[in-house]
Amino acid sequence: MPGRLLVRNIGEFFTGRIDAPTAPVRALLAEDGRIASLDPPADVAAEAVIDADGGAVLPGLIDGHVHPVFGEWTPAQDAIGWIGNYLHGGTTSMVSAGELHIPGLDYANLTPELVTSIAIVTRATTGRVRWSGVKVHAGTVLLVPGMEEAQFDRLAAAGVRFAKFLFFPFADREAEATRYVAWCRARGILVKVHTGGVSRSGASVVCGYDVLSWLQPDIAAHVSGGPIPMPDADVEEVVDRTAFALEVCSSGNYRSTLLLAQRLAERGQLHRLVLGTDTPGGTGVIPRGMLRNILYLASVCGLTPGEAVATATGNVGLAHGLDEGVLEPGRPADFLVCGPVTGSAGSTLADAIAHGDLPGISHVVIDGRVVVAGGSRQTPPPAKPGVFSCCDAGGSRFACTPA
Image 1 (cartoon, rainbow, N blue to C red):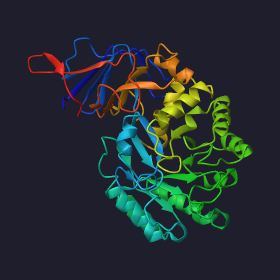
Image 2: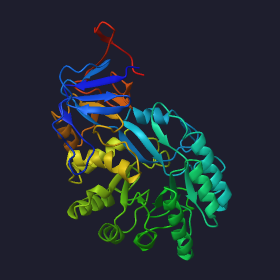
Image 3: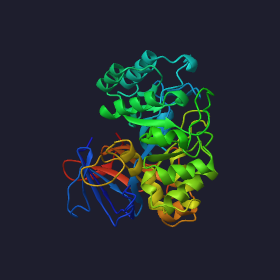
Image 4: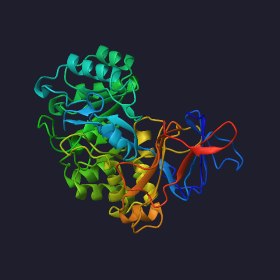
């Protein structure tokens, strides 16, 4: 695959930064998997070129809440190839919130050794390679009573980066739970917690502000429901009286999402808002789930299109300690080329997003490698699809296929 990729004739550029979500960038140069420069010299040489033809470039979407199990098969929906379909919906990275759909897993009898082993094995299998090119951060340990510090040492040594409270009985184990958080942080493991009512399994516990106030996780999962949210008063207190990241998922309550987004905006705290799908699961397999989240935030909840994109990219990356999600020199060259589809109410991508119209994706790039070209199989084609071409030794350009 060519070492340099140039994207030119960019019409709109979304940075992924919540504080400066758009920029007047007209070209992007990627080299060796990372962004080398924005608006490089007009005569810069590149082995591959995407002519965006006035279309938009935005960071690849980061789904902060997925439930993988074995590669691209999910027993939750008995579906194969779901990660590749999410790629065509614009998702270039995803973070596991626990591999809890393993067939036969007994939620009532999760032992410390079992959850430790599941996380280590999943990290060494599903989390070891890329699936359809997507960066899948799998191997998230589900925290249960009785764990010892040595198990956290093993998890860290195996490269496990995330932990989650889901089946943990908070009511009489506050000291133990806070000890787990401290052990995780000492080892660079980020802590997420299931919030709201019980999950599909019925085995999880209810978690609202009363628990979050003392637990102080790094990320509160699906604050507006996954599938059932915490009470409105708890949502307001979580916004007003805590500082950690607050996640919204496709599986949640739309009215609670509106409350959360508006209150964060009123408090000037949109940097805390992160997105995920909470799938595969009872909500199903939804390749366009992250796009739908963006459209809802922009068309109903009052965020600007750029802010909505940032909640699905830079905010998620920052909350999860990832380098992806922001388009600037030195960052991974993970991005989408897209635009409004024919018939959309918007003449620009920003207009389309503000109206709630699904964008059309023409190209997906991960680490500077074009992995989708000529159109996504999960979105309609954009009105201006752009062109991907390569250059031979003599400088002549020709159509080429993605990596």
